Length: 306
Image (tube, rainbow, N blue to C red; front, side, top):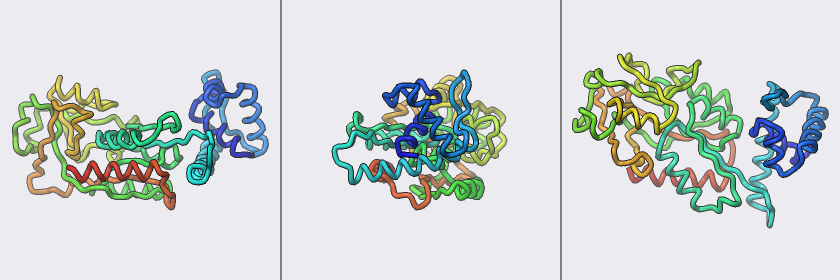
């Protein structure tokens, strides 16, 4: 088994088919097929399910790819630091809950590199996928929040995935809505005032848990709720239906536009459930890459301005 075998297997797992992986790797499909068969024979396991729809990982394959990414990422880090004149295209990925500041920091970080030499990825996704992406090293860094409600459940999941949480900022909840909303000019907004308007939340999947909700106070009983899968749809629903969501109040106007505002949420004396601790997750004892360190610096720089 060679580093090339690891690179091939990782690429196939990400591409989902031998054809696509062969194109990415600039090799013939028969050569790639042979390499994967040799690897499976050497390891004594089946890494991929093969079907007319493509290639999917088996249970053994999922575990193998997790370890393969760790080994290959360490190799890439060594090459980044000590290699000279190599043609290896370095990779860096971030997975995050739907925070515009996380995307803004990513943009500022990428500007410092030649995108022809690097392969960058930013993924705004479900909470459980943020955790899974970092656990499997699909992404180096994940961005999510903890609260009094979800803290124990999320930290338990992080520990079982060999991940650690690093705090970036503490903040109270805000009501996020468009400037034309009937409540937009209020100094604060209470839950009672929101009763006539739909609460917007990000879809977390069929088996989602309250603990995975991106919106704080997710256990409240909202008489009207609408779920969305992406930030653009949620912003449209705010305008079209006078919807709202509860968030950190850290909004990047450059990305979301200037038609939306964040109004402090009035917790009416009980702020314990409306506090958010936003931070990043990484693999335990893993040294961040140059891109990873710069990304965290850009996030901290942005948050200091808020």
